[in-house]
Length: 448
Image (cartoon, rainbow, N blue to C red; front, side, top):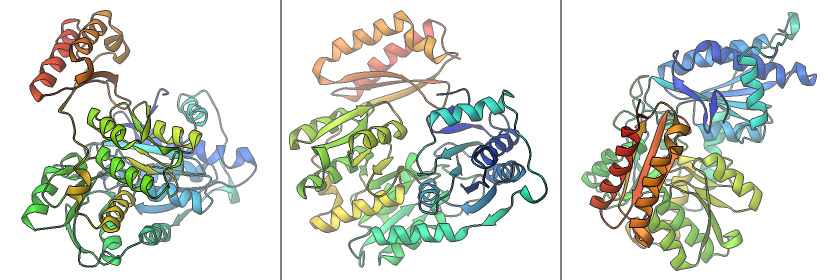
């Protein structure tokens, strides 16, 4: 990670950590780097979520891009995976998504994608950071070289068509609930399910610039759980602010997590001989019960650092086709270059319809171990994590758990936070061991 860009872009509180000047500088550099620097006019596509500040950052990025001679194609409110898809399909030099994903409305972020629709290479991000810090000077465009903006809502419509084409089955007669988190999926998800014949029920589809992710979406699944049960729905799906995540709810109102989805679809691929390398790719945060369930059905797995960026890198290097995170970032590398919440929901529907079984039955073989995860805001993530006394306490907990659980201590990629996670036989054990480690972090003076 660089100075500004973490595992999922440049993220922080709008106009405090991430300012409109930053956005303009990012546009300035990208417009020049992919344009005049290469002896051509750059084409860059931009999408945004529903945060109030997203409009400010959109215009700042466009200003920077045009000042450097690039043409900025604006998809307006749309999802991160749609920007990734259109960047790749329509031959853009790069793509930009304005979103802080599942964070509250006052945060925002700028995610950069290369011409393949993949997260931008570290080498290029470091050059962007050098420009922001004044280490690089670039010229402005003049006269006929100045860029323009182009309304590109047609790109979003093309992406919707692509999603519809992904389904092998009609959804006629199936009652589906969607929680679109007052975010980027609010204009897309229902149209896809309606087109496929579902009877679609939608909640949290009235964005006002401030209510994105507020008590809704994949980070507050309880609302959808209640909605599915009260309305007698067959299944429900919840997305986050930029719709690159998806969690599901079965017909009984039970949460079906990212681990469950990877398990189900992995088994489905294996049965059809489609699971290349007989392997899925997940992060170290996947549940202990998930690994046990995969062992039982003979599916292998690679573990990466936390972040769908690392999952995708592994998939590209190995040819593995399925991977993701328990949080709902699921990557189907044959169809997408990033997590795609709506595509994930279509794939879950595919398994349910192909096997003619309710979601509760498909998810049942994977039983999650109790887990407690607590975040601790610290002054310095490396100092807290590498403190000898903290490490000693982690080792003590690991020894106590033995083969019946695990402990994980890691740094957040986007916040000044240390995450302490324990999985064990009971919730009480998890709480006890997590608190033991946090007490040491606090006693050593690391807490902010």
